Amino acid sequence: MRFLQRPNDPQQNHAGADNDSDSGERLQQIRAQSDSLLAAGDDAIQRALAGSNSEAFLRSTRQLGGQ
Amino acid sequence: MSERIMGVETEYAISGMQGEEAADHSTIIRHLLDLAHTSLPNLQDGSSSGLFLENGARFYLDCGMHMEYSTPEVSNPWDAVRYVEAGHDTMLSLIQRVGKERMPELQTGCYRVNVDYSGTGSTWGCHESYLHRMPPADLPRDLIPHLVTRQIYTGAGGFEPFSSGLKFTLSPRAAHIDRTISFDSTNARGIFHSKNEPLCSGYNRLHVICGENLCSHVAMFVKFGATSLVVAMAEAGLAPGSAVQLDSPLSAFRTVSGDVTLKRPLKITGQLNRMTAIEIQRHYLAMAEQHSRDKFMPLWAPEVCTQWRRVLDALDSSFDAACKMLDWPIKLHLFASHAARRGMNWSRLPLWTSIVERLHRAMELPMNGEIFPLDQAISPGTTVPGVVLRIAAFLHRKGLDWDELRSLLKLRAEFYEIDTRFGQLGPRGIFQMLDRDGVLEHQVSGVDNFEYATRNPPRKSRAKIRGAVVRRLAGYEEGRWVCYWDRIFSQKYGRMLDLSDPFAMSEAWCNIPREQAF
Image (cartoon, rainbow over all chains, first blue to last red; front, side, top):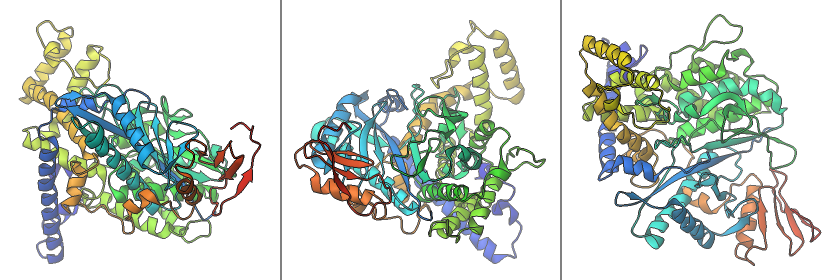
């Protein structure tokens, strides 16, 4: 995801290194893993929020004082 | 000393919902404590209504009506993570039983979470303790730069709880830290907590209150391991923090918690060059690696250094690696993805947050995180017409309109719920679902056996004795035996087990005068 990339991110450093097959494979692997995390994350969020009213939920976890 | 002792306190949020109605907390807590008393082998906790368990841990009701679990004293970061997880298992089992056996009409939940987003301004803590033998007054110099900068891997991720917008932060609890050093832990909290309550003889206790509840094992492991090594180096006289004294620790703490790029430099006292949080962490790591096999270091120092380096390298190079490893990068990834699914432009979040906060300040409303009345603020009858006009002109120039902000504010509670449910214990927890799906890389080899740890104490501290004695005496003349961290005694029998040595490995019973007050 571009908003998370930084100047020394290998996704950027190796963007034009087509001749570096190891880096290319690693890059593909990283991208595939990242995509699978996002897909799993979206699914997990949908399941966690299913049928929930967020404001009522936050009221139910409210702490009454102290820490 | 080459052996270290540490411990962790975890405060839990709980919920009980009947439809969309929140159930009475005190009733849930009463059932939960009753189930704990009747189903877990225990001795009465002498200083509260809680109990000490057969694994040496303490389980009790803390101020603010939340349940708290203190791990037994452990001697390495593997056990620290293991017994934190054992606490989660114990809590989850009890809250599930409350739902099934006592209040079947309720949908119950338990959460390792750090801030209350409902507007109360409260926070749930995750405190760490480290025994040491150096003068307590010398610790802030060596610890504060570490505590400020370790947020890059100890941050739980989440949202700034007092913002009227939606502001992502590495460490949501950082908003509750408002001074550099404090004695208090429930108000006016400091980066460095100066209270020294050893609960044993011959040692001092560093009590860290600026940390957070985490899900990632490697984040927890490095948090406990690295902080232990910094304490060990300070104790050995290496002054690990002296070369990285921060000009303004509190300001630096806020800078680090708000900087997802990890690039913002921090001003170092007496130096022209500034350093990033990663560079300061690498300073501590380099010193730990250099001394990792010295006599004053624990045997596990090299493995901690390996994991510490793994985490810093991940943060410093491919961010995708950190996105599967540490709490705040995982959350940032998920939040941004969810925003896109909901049609929200994540990259414009800081802009909208600054706009709503500007309106908020202009209207002089309390900054408590409650929902901002946008429609009232920009209505023809607004109390701040000049500010609204200037913002409207700015939005027009940028091709934006109020509707985007209106949508964002509507989704705010949903993002807060996602953050809270990320750390939910059990199968509905988002982190737990991701872990089950095998898409994370947060595990540390050797951090396992959680179920065993719920019933058995660690091997290398006085907790081993405490746990064995709790198991032996539990249920034997209810209430006759009382347990504290440093002793177990019975007034009736005039007997006391001395646990004042934190490394005690054998039982040392003595007679006490029956009338002696404790």
